Amino acid sequence: MEIVIANESHFKYAKIISDTIAESAKVRGTGIAQRTPEYIIKRLEHENAIIALDDDKFAGFCYIEVWGHQKFVANSGLIVHPDYRNQGLAKKIKKAIFELSLKKFPEAKIFGITTGLAVMKMNYELGYKPVTFSELT
Ligand SMILES: CC(C)(COP(=O)(O)OP(=O)(O)OC[C@H]1O[C@@H](n2cnc3c(N)ncnc32)[C@H](O)[C@@H]1OP(=O)(O)O)[C@@H](O)C(=O)NCCC(=O)NCCS
View 1: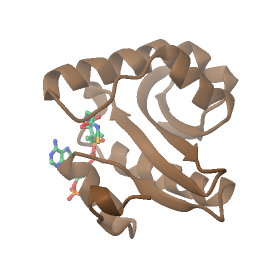
View 2: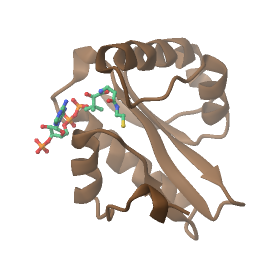
View 3: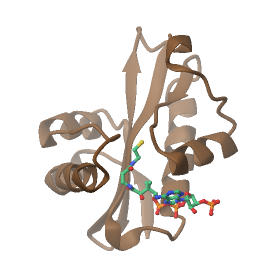
């Protein structure tokens, strides 16, 4: 398994990332926002994403959202393909996207936005502090 910063060479995965997010949202009924391949391609283009690949098979993805003139960044859209779940992959992707956020945006406040218990636990372990919606900037 390789977990790398995504770039133009990963454009071909935009569709399967988008489809996997859509499938999971259907199963779960809530929580994860629909993302078009075009939206994902933009994150790849700016190298604001982490992708996990098993040889050339898509395994997982997460991206960085930037706003407020780079004063705020959020790690969002964490997805692990069903074939690769419960092996600790989400944790590794979360760690990689957190480190990328710190490196690219050292001055920014970093948020993790989630409705899922699993992701909340992971964020907590990385040192995020829980805040309510009204406390978000
Ligand atoms: C949530 C998701 C990313 C987890 O991926 P994963 O690779 O299976 O997770 P990991 O194996 O790294 O597990 C990380 C931790 O979360 C826990 N966990 C995993 N799935 C869970 C679930 N559905 N409910 C509760 N806890 C869960 C694991 O037990 C583990 O905790 P531990 O460290 O105490 O053992 C994956 O199931 C997924 O893509 N789901 C659909 C999309 C989604 O819900 N994304 C989050 C939107 S906010």
